[in-house]
Length: 613
Image (tube, helix red, strand yellow):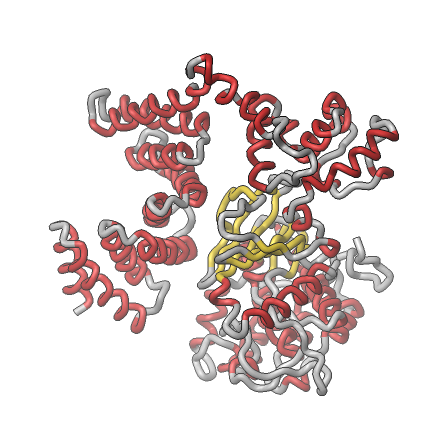
């Protein structure tokens, strides 16, 4: 039935009967998801064609959902540069483009073009097509010089492979000509209008005599001033607030001097004492008094514990430029972003507000803001830094540092114990970080490899669950719904029973077992296969406790015998009865007191280490 329905769908698609094809593909996808799973290769293939049927009906938002799910699944199973993954990302980019999500489309087309150039070659038709679409996404963001580069490469390649008179070549040449005209438009306008249209003239309008010098500038105006300054001086374009204040108080001649002394917009708000020495006492006073005209809500966003949660109304510009998509989930997405305010790169997690807040909005927002302020106060070498947070009309945004190289799941797939000795240190470092969290009355609630980052040999907890308060009558126990990942959640969490800090211990114990298996030369697939052949034949430890001691015994007989000490802690973390498990403090003590060398980094080996930096 699924095969026949899929063939009917393809036939209808070829006949451009897209709505009928959609029905067939949807039936196939529903059946395959039920019987084979969401990430099964055939399910993803059918879902890809469902996305294309939706796309051709101009149901772009629905097509986006399908292509995003397919691209994520194919990247996990086939790899980032596989032709099917790249093809799905290309269609995802097109769906985003037609919704005018040009910056997000740019990210997809850039990834696809880079991947296709590596795997297919510079002049392959698919590579050239992706560069053509990348140019279009850049053009609609007024990134004319970047768009020109892409159109030029696509046009040159199509001339070589298709000929100058081919319709695809002509289409790209037409856009190339158009973008060149756009980028030179200001210079070619009539002289009586040139003052307004040139960058200098447009900049003057923000400082006209009609404007009251006490009127505050909006984030949008500051962004526009930054863009205009960048055309003449990229250095000045990074400090639009400093430019505005110095120009307002009549000391613009000192702008380059304060930049050379290391001053930037990130210093706002300032005091007279914190200003560079090149400013005279009177200029300092004037600067401090005038700075209120540039103290927008964006100022607070990157101030960490000292900052405030920001609310952006619909249409308000966000002070971040999207640089890439790091990962996606059901209701969330993690991006790499560049701050227009501080010129720093961050990881940004966006969660749909509709998914996060299901109860009374006012009370939930108040609780959320309090929780975020608590997260900002968490300072530890092995916990990501929560830089700031905001809400807009659609999303909750969490700004975090650093932008890590990979998560632990990806690390374990590629690591071999002899070439990655730092893996042993991750045990003690993660245990110490969890001890710190529990001392701060915070539970993580969703410990898994995907929420543990690896960056420059350092390991960090990330992506905490919300609803952080667990200090009720019993000390640290709560009930009810919670965030959970089935493979790693504790038995009591899966059953919605009372849970406390020991639920984190269980989850970390599962992660530790996967890390120990990697030390012994085993993959996650090896572990799953073993569990399928023993006990209840379930792959989750909580549903196959009988297989756990057998798996440990098998691992103990392989690899370095000195690594076997880890299994003592792991089995004490994975007791079904939560009261019997190790606490984070006892786990740290066991690791540090162990005679086995290397299971704790030097950063965490001494209780006297100061983690405040």
